[in-house]
Amino acid sequence: RLVMEAAAAYPFRAPPPQTLNHLPFLRRRSPALTLPAIAAASLIVFMTFATVLGGISRCVPSKNILQGSLGRGVSAGPSRSSNSPASTTITTTTRFCSGNFGWSSFLPVVPKHDNDDVPRHRRNVKGFGRRKMSKMLDEMNSLKREKVRSMGTGPSSTTASIQWKGPLNVIKYPDPRLRTENEKITEFGKPLQELADEMFDVMYDDDGCGLAAPQVGINYRLMVFNPQGDRRKKDTEMVLANPEIISSGEEKDWFREGCLSFPGIRGQVERPTKVLIRAQDVKGEDIEFELEGFTARVFQHEYDHLSGTLFHDRMPDKEVAEIHAKLVTLEDNFVEANPILADDIKRVGPKPETKKVFGIF
Image (cartoon, rainbow, N blue to C red; front, side, top):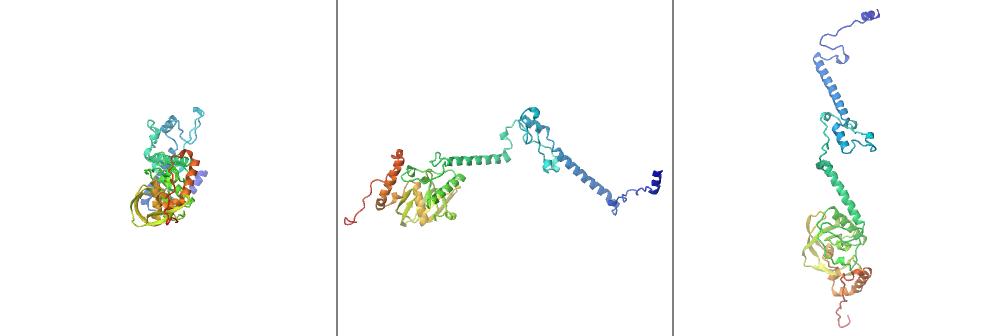
């Protein structure tokens, strides 16, 4: 009876055919647009559902991946128990959980290393693996250089690359390494730049304006200099490898020079005021330029070191006679500290006799 009364009070009215005007969100719309709108909405719902379903499917690892990982003894996730096969647990990290899902979810998942016949070190070499291996090799070489430097100053043992040991110190006359023939540099780049930086530090610490590699016990054709002698003025620093003098100017002058390998000794040396040189920079690129004035003198002084020539070799007899006693003292001190090298050093020889004027001066 109640149903009959309710039906009489609220009679059912069927909507007109081919219209849905009784729905509130479709009122005021033309019947011609109703069916396309419904189709579009249905398509959007289907696409959303398919995308979510494809993303969820990524959460389940494929059978090939699990079998391949377990067969190689590698877990498919960050945690795996190694107590027994029964207690082995596999944890997977999925793209869906990280938010990376979309239409690519419909593509088949192909494991990168599904082929067990290929050695692991041969897989994915062209891409990320090569860059990662290169980075690891660079780190290993850097650690090797640091280990070599920590062993102390010493001469090089190979010609292909410069093997040096830090910390570097200026060796004093008459160390035989100052007269040893210096080899040509064939390796450039970061190792050479590190050596040059270390040489600059030694030069500045000893208040110098130039330093050659033989002066720190490394017999290679390398020099660094800064005519300003100020570590803050980096723009005037120069690093030259395998330098050569192409030509020298005819004009010469005298200057009272000093040398870090001869502490407390200075003397007059005559040199050209202008030189044209050719060398290589730390990258191995050929450079050619002209130096003049004090910069040219500094270069020639260090260039002599690369040839085994010391600055007192270019002094006149008068200058050598004045510093002869100091040179002999350095020689005696070196032999006392290194008696085994007594026969390997080149001594200054007897004191030169100076000409006297009227038997007085």
